[in-house]
Image (cartoon, rainbow, N blue to C red; front, side, top):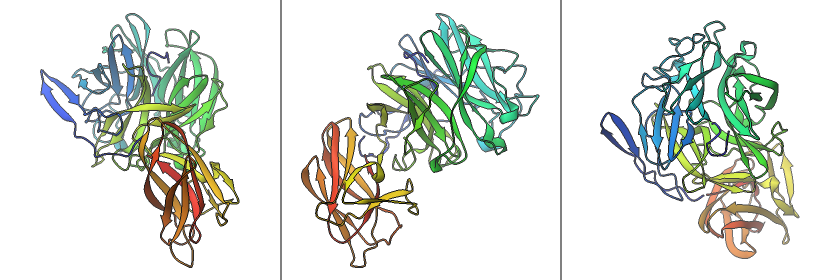
Length: 460
């Protein structure tokens, strides 16, 4: 995707602010209170799943999975915060290859399998939409293309599918990436429909975005416990010299859905996955449920933002959120989401890693912090100075009772982290506040009372 528009796709949480809905002139205008440090609530508080965002001039256009009788919903904004949801359908008709009457029960009433649109410009009055729909011939999901002369459409579909691979479960979730005058399509083979692996794939397309060319490359597949049986919804973004592949994983229909990322110094990989997901229900303290379907866009202030969906409290629709996206080198940081640091990735002396730890977040923990010179030192990054919530995931099986670790923040004594008795491998969280400076900080744990192991820490 060209960097002027998004390819497809941290502070303590405050109470979510309610969005104000104003119905006027047949348009639904959604206004959400903006905050630089918290999740203030959805910016479109209605069904607007799998959002894709494109900027044309000073206007942002967002497109979403089918709902409310429309194949593709769309909305406009000038600031990524206040959105006007349009009444019209951006894609009034599907290609001849697609079945408009097919129903997808897990998606809820009215879900006809028209999913995850991706829209990009190929000229001043030339726009292409990629969309997922149900293929009449194979009975699987495939990706089609449509064209329009305006960002809001109506987009006119092509008669044949662009990507249709029923032998590997079908194809869904197209996204676009462009650099050096070349455009690429990313997508997922829908293997979870039929007990196959789910790969995120990349292939070059023609300049008009209507034909695949060149070699196809498999980038990543499901491999981590938090991903469940699938990865999907690829979004490729280049930050500095690093390619950052954002993706969603696990089951979309509940709070287990997550977003994560992988990085590479080459377009076609190999890509290295992050140890922990980027956005989860827990990372947002439960205020956003099942965050996924993400897209990245540069805001009017020149700063990156991540746009994504999350379920409402009753799990009846997926609203759209927009949060600031900061960077620690090539590591993305979503404002309002806890940043997890695994203990085994910390620097530790006179302590040891223990593998195959039952229930640990990544299967490895650090213990043996039993000596005066024992240290487990985490290097953490925060975009702004201030008070942060430090959550330590621990287990304390000491026979003598409560345990603790001494704490050093940037080399200065900062009291202790205290652990009630839990038993070994019964991981609980101890929380306390710490004051951090903008940028890189060190948080070091040392010998305190009795004995405890550390699984990971979260900073928010």
